[in-house]
Length: 216
Length: 243
Image 1 (tube, chains in turn yellow, green):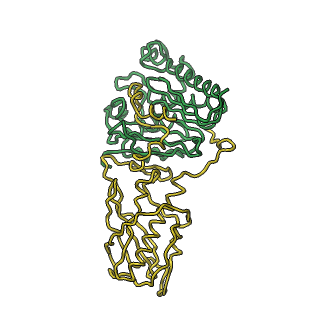
Image 2 (cartoon, each protein chain N blue to C red):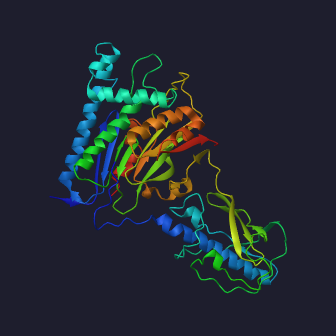
Image 3 (cartoon, chains in turn cyan, red):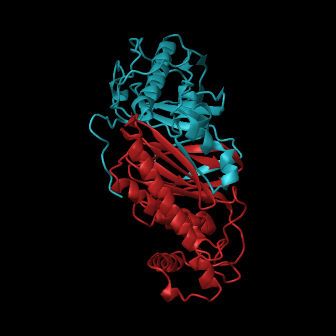
């Protein structure tokens, strides 16, 4: 098949998910980071709960990829503040002066404020902090963050992600954008066609594709 | 003359549903004519290949009334491809029932859909998808500029979509499984209807191969994904119970 471009006058733009997701994730990470720094001055580290947006977002992919180059505006995360669980290393809160409030738009991770840089600020070997498991509508999500000794957020790992379905999708190649069921349930409007084991005409008439064909 | 952005058609074809969505700005008559050519081609292919039609070439070959070498060009082309697939898949793909009767149905639907979709390109349409029973060939994008988004049916509940895949421009998707028409796939190696998978989809540039790879990959089970991805630009999405 030739891969023709769309006709003139039609923009081929990146999908909504690609535009917004990195920003949503980064905003969540950014706010969580700032919240943590704020909490540090009072001795109790607070980590803002990761935004629910990645789960209820219509286009949320199942993999969270933080793109440090993306600075697009994003939706505000929820304000629920949850106490973190230290996983390893120094359980004491990292010492830092109050960080300036981050704007709503996510700043690149490497641009996070650094005060009183210690000897090796670049190494990602500082505190490891896991967010508490947060129960959201479609399951549990938990992130683990790691900081450099200069208290710069340098790593985010997804410890848990909703995966409590009867069936699970194995995706062996992440080159394809595949949105999981959590995103599907809220936005069937996004689907233009359905693929499954061949359905009979009778089954079809009562099924999903018939709905898709009848939509405006 | 009725210019519109969105044209949708549905018809019964090849024992299942054929559905065409055109997102080109074009005259409704142009879209209608393109759709009719698609339906006509699917119908004529069905007359040649259906095992349910007594006079089809496949039925006549099965009864010994017609030698394969005397069959039409299309039938020979299909059996060529099926033979290659049997070898390439180590027998997981097969165009024969366990009792020995010919049944290339596992290949014909995808092949026919891709051939029909060529008619759309020839008629100047650049943004559409054609689905025959859930085997889908696309070209271009949706009117919104987004890629075509296809839901994969949950194999445990065919009223639900399990995940959504965005189809790269010009690519196709086909899914094999046990859900919709009963267990219509048999294992060419063991002659049994088994697979540890519930559903197996393949995305790639040509629907005829995506469909055949999905059939074979489903039979292969967990090794199917690796096998499929040995083919350039083809990717597999396997759904398994408690994977």
